[in-house]
Structures are given as C-alpha cells and as structure tokens.
Length: 223
Figure 1 (cartoon, rainbow, N blue to C red):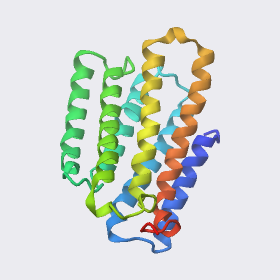
Figure 2: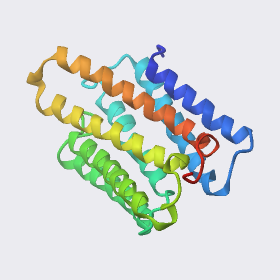
Figure 3: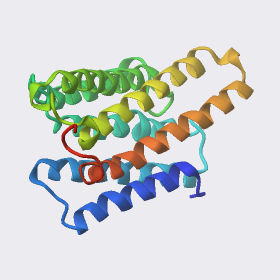
Figure 4: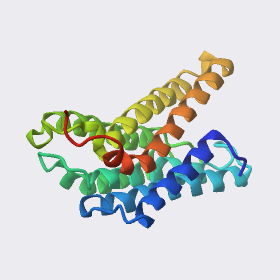
C-alpha cells in the first residue's frame, strides 16, 4: 500500500483512538462509540490495502469494489449512528435501516446491477444517502437538545463526528453523481476534485480518532 495523506490520516486516527483507550480515558458513554470508530478506521484501512494491492480497476474487479466501498463502508458508518444520542430515539431505526439497505442491495444485485459485473450505483447512492440522512438529522437534533443547551458542543466527540461525516459524505456523494452520471466533465477536472475529496475524507477519519480528546481540550460549558 502506497502511503498517502489518506492512508496516513487513517493510521493516525487509529493511533489516537487506541491511545484514548490505553490512557484510560474511557467514559462509559463513549466506550461503544470508541470501538465502532476503531472498526470504521480499521475497515477502511483494510479496504484501501486490499484494493491498492489487487491492482484492479472498478471495471476489472467490480465485485471487490462493490463489497468494500458500496456495502462495507456505509454499513460500518451506520453502525456508529446506532450509538449516538438522538433525542427522538432515532438510533433505534439504524439497524433496521441497515438491514433494509443490504436487502435492497441484494435485490439490485439480482435484477438490475450484478455485483460482479457493474459498479452498483443505485446501491452506492442509497447507502451513502442513509449515512447523510442520519448525519443531517443528528446534527440538527444535537443543536436542539435541551441537555446540550449550555454545553460547549466543541467538547462533545459525537458533534465532531457528525459534522465531519456530514461534510465528507456530502462532498463524496456529489462527486460520485458528477463523475458517474456526467463523465463529460473531463478527467482533468475530476482528478483535481478527487484530490480534494480524498483530503476531506482523510480529515474526517483523522478527526474520528482525535474527537475523543475534545472533552480534554475544550471546556464543557461556555464561560
């Protein structure tokens, strides 16, 4: 695997999330979230390693690409949202929604876009739309929750998580639509935009690991 800012950001994210555990900074409310963040980071790093060493293109190995980036990536991210404190208890819908996403993906594989032949654009859009939806809802919800009214949101790890996921996945979603459905925009433009997309994704994964230290950096209450 060739080292890039993206892979270095993943490694640093893993390092900080693991360091948080080793130092004993492990409040009960963040315990499951910490393990899920590590799962997300390790899964993404493993996906990058497998894909970069397969010497395959999307067209040449659609099955591997679909498995890693169409199914596993959004599924692990959705698992994180199942543990975040929605005031409306919306987190209880995450697992059924994830199961529904996988079921729809199977149907799409059988009848529309075979998983081993094509990039499953419909499944990709559905999975990433779910992640975006939950991140938007959580971001709005945490701003309205009365228990966080006097709390400095910058001191909350899941505020950083939801914010960075929202921006990164939003940009990734738009980029996918433009490159897949409007290939006429040209490789030059796509290449430059892709660099920015990867950069912001790297920042997101790095911030997932760093976010656990937010309570020790920022005051919990406004002064």
